[in-house]
Every structure is written in C-alpha cells, then in structure tokens.
Image (cartoon, rainbow, N blue to C red; front, side):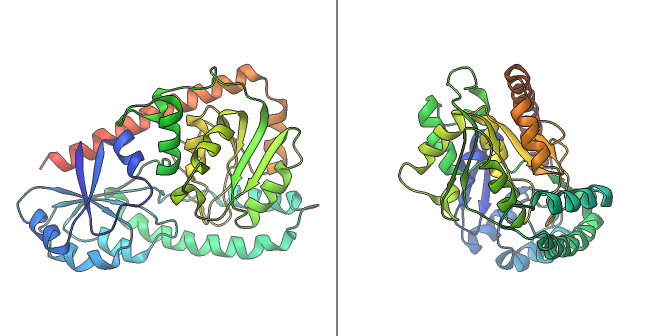
Length: 341
C-alpha cells in the first residue's frame, strides 16, 4: 500500500483508492504534514478543500509533493494556484483539462431541446446550462497552462457501493471490484434502472425519458444517498444494477463523469449516457467505449432497447477490461511519481 495524507477526514472514495490504486488514506495534523514533507521524501497528498493547504504547499521543498485533487468539478482557481507551486511534482485529478469541441457541445444542446419536449423541462433551460458550461470552459483553459504536470484519473465508486458489492460477491479487503464479473451469474429482469436524486435539467429529462422505457425501474433517493447512506441502501443499489441490462448514467452536478458509470459496469450493466454534459465540457481518454453515448437521450435509449444481449455483454466486458488497464497504469504512475525522487 502507498500511504497518502490529508488534512481532511476521508471522503467517500476510500474503498476505491485502496482497492483500485493501492492507496491508503491517512488524516494528519498540520504539524504532521510539515514534518512529513520536510524529510526529503516525496509525499502523496489527497486534497478536497484547498484553503488549508496553500500556505503549507508554499513552504514545502521544491518538487516534494504529488497531489490527488478530488471533488473539483468546477476547476477551482485555488487548486490551480496550488498546482503551479514549485513544490508540486505532479497533480492527478478526476476531471480532465481538455474540453469537448464546440461542434459536440452544439449538437448536445440541440438534442436537449428536442428531448425536452413532452417532459417537465422547458427547452430554454438549456441556455443557463450552456452559459454555466462556458464559464467552466474558461477556467478549464487556465488549467491547460499546467497541463504538462496534470493527468486525469478515473472517478471510481463510492464506499457505500463498494462495501455492499464486496459483501454481495464475497470480495476480500483489497480485491478490485472489476475482478468479479456478475453478468452471467444473475438474472437481468430489468431493461434499465436508475436510483438517485433528480438533479439538474439534463438529468431530469433523461430520467423522464427512461421512465417510458419498457420494464424500466426509476427510484428517487435524497442527494447524499450514494456517498454516505446507511442501512441497506447500498445493497439495494447493487441488487438494482445487477438485475438490469442497462443503467441510466446522467450527468452529475456539473460533469459527465460520474460514480454511476463505474458502479454500473462493475455490476455488469451497460451505462447509457450523454456524449457531453452541457454544464461541463471535459473529455476522458477511457470513455471512448464502455457505454451507449449519444447527444440525445432519445437516441441512446432507443439503441439500448434494440441492442442484442450478446452485443451488450461484449461491450460490458470490453469496457471493464479497459477500465482495469487504466487503473493498473494509473496506480503504477502514481507510485513511480512518489517513490522515484
């Protein structure tokens, strides 16, 4: 295990970091942080809220820190200021710094206008969404000034999901969830499922379209359910995904990258998603396969309904293999950056 340190309590990705990247999260005090980075060893830091780190990063020796930035869908300029510091050797983050093309953005906006017809969302709601996306794009462009020392890594899955999945399939503590493939071990009685909160406009339109799919199941749960839920919510969620052929995977608060994408594939369900989220414009190198992705929800859901089961299973297997390869390579790169001084 590679130790990683944080001034903050562990967030909801501890299981993912340990199982997939071989990283053990440890919370430390400011004095412990200073002691850790002053002993000539390169240190891995996990950062969520940047405010408490800035002065410590400024005081750290040059080239002494590797930072994993989580929870930054909006491309924080505070985090960018930290990434520029001489003490930072390399930065890993969940969201990329390369935007989608304007052509793809326009195509998705036009498709939203069509998809919104007959739903609770008015077509003009695409306007504030796109404006928000353009603001994000501007901040993303600033991040490109440090692109030479920044790489995206998969978002992964939540602890709630991982613990329920591990119990369901008998996984040991450090086993990857992608080492177990439940596609052929469960009866997929549902065509399409979604469990979560209603979210923003693109998500709402997708959910309402999904409700019309034959034999679909849509359940609304409060906003914190996937990250910090108690009781049997995680087990119910795993049961839902393992019983379905497809999983609706709409944009989150501001990004097309979502926990649901990885959780669905781990359970053998093929994600159905939009090719671009209007509120966030990044593209990920490992998302060229592994889902049904269209500018339009209507077209994506139609493709799902018409897809033969043999093709669906083949695409799930290919996507899981690709993600496993990406995670193995990411773990290797992070370890090399920390240990090779």
